[in-house]
Length: 209
Image (cartoon, rainbow, N blue to C red; front, side, top):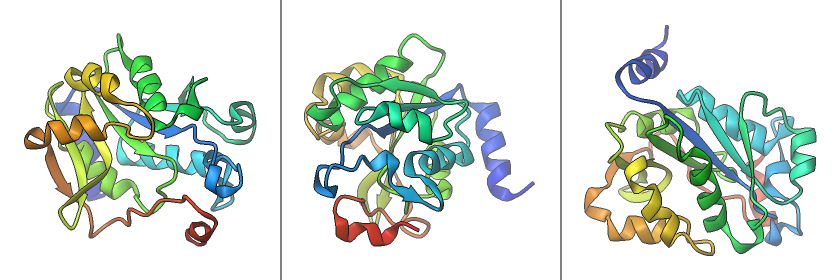
């Protein structure tokens, strides 16, 4: 068993369930209307790759929020074992997807959500596993950092879900809530193992394989 596998096993034994929450509903407006979930990466849709990264990081339960061309995503991507959450309001921005994803976890035994974005393939399982390991209880609040600057993924303990959902509007996601609770966030440096670029424009497609 590798060191990373050992760390994942210790996380499973010592802490209550943490679910991976993948936000993959965007329509790719700056990509000519091509949904990011369906962009090809390593021979498969990007959403399939991103879900696999969460699984490799140690998330046994994964909720994937779909929006633009959700039916096509379901047909083309192998998301077996994932809970697929439809967000009919995806055009309103990432905030609506975060709300939908957290709502799908509310009432389950999950005590925290590791939130990742479908359009950041440069952030691999090593970075996600580091942030996942910062989970302690339902009050946990942690974020990856790159040279000290907060980024994704973000770990949201269940005690924060209602507050995050109330402030998640437009494309802000959890940004406003995290800004207001900056003193409570555990920053986990990941700059040595990940590159936090976004796939937003045609020029960014160079990052896909």
